[in-house]
Length: 128
Image 1 (cartoon, rainbow, N blue to C red):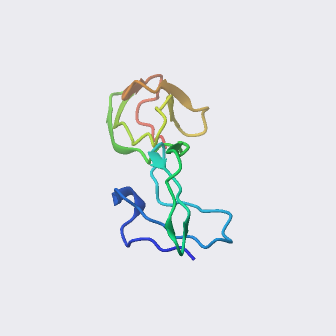
Image 2 (cartoon, rainbow, N blue to C red):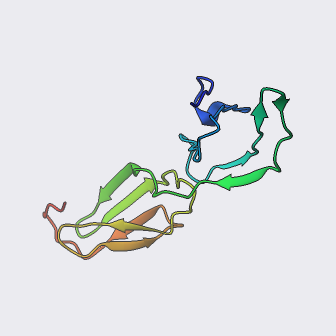
């Protein structure tokens, strides 16, 4: 049996969870990637609550970056300037961006950059 308040965990400052004595695993969900949380445990019986355990720091693992947004293109006869906004990194800094042009191998751009000029393109040609 698990009882929680109705707020998602990331909006809760003092979450209280009641677990039955036979429960051996408790999973906290809806934490953001890379989020830190301090947890302590406390045993309760009909006589009352025992002392809380020492706090344990828990950090969720990072996940892949969010979807790219605000991508802008401007072209000349033989090049295209591509710029973008940095996505949410979800707990780990973006290390590189990959720009895909048709069937060519991806162009690898350093994660600190937010634009790139693709050169050596052919005039009057459509690229995907």
